[in-house]
Length: 390
Image (cartoon, rainbow, N blue to C red; front, side, top):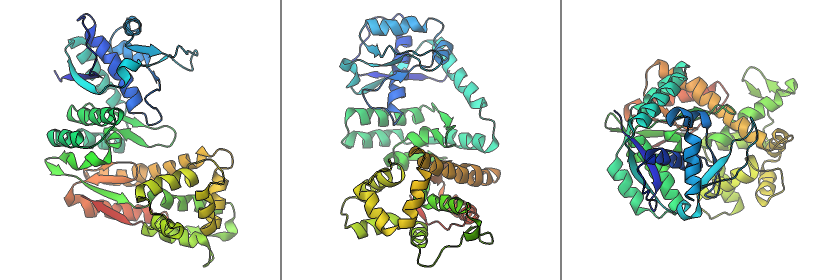
């Protein structure tokens, strides 16, 4: 039988053997609920999905949870709203600030129930291109020893260490998860959850993987929303080229040119005299301009000075709720990457994995994947810049 592992605080030693694996499983479930949800912090509570626990552990799972509370290993927020919110849990302070350790679960019933549940979840994926993507995911491996050696060398707080360690472990153990986000259509799985610094350790048939990155992808995709904005006024929309007819001196043209060339962030850094790292600047720009609330931050004011028309359209998409724009951008991303490009690659049985706005494939498939990406973006009136990362 395929082994199953739990991840518990390194300073936790349960003296009792009775129900020990059940306790381990619940603790791991809480760990995962906090570590793998980017919205949560160390002090957050994680909801425990009752039907899931019942399937894996049995009907007495509430007793096991209470035992852990009584032993002051976990604590609850005690907030329950019928049909809306379950009680949530977290580790107590004594255990929440400890690095995790791996322990093997030996209870054959738990092991059998867990992997059976995983197979049932896999069968729920019915659409062909998603099944193909999951199949590709199942075929990857990780150079575990090298990845762990690298993990041990980098400076991390214990929370980062736990998250990175568990991500590596789950790939090594082929403990796959595959979630299709119902809001924007993005796919979340082991690969999207793995920090990019560990991608060089991934393998497919003993081959290293190559990343095909779409430069400035989300700012680039905003050009699609700009076109949709102008659809409200047919007088400025040129149906022959599937895009609005924009005056030569409009900042919309400059914005499109920069995002297609993958130079948007560099342009803004030069104009603003910014010296910080590009990645930090990128996060700041996105938070303050595309994803943040409609407020006159320094970044938004400076952006507006160079891209007045673009800024007006950003405000249009945020007029009801500032979060709407981020959802719209992620929806356009998922539509192109998962619903347009992926099915073509799946039909041709080209090994590929998606990480939101980039693809992973083998070296011999680079040109094929690039060709499909460029073709599908062209249908949207865009010509992206693709970067190959080994």
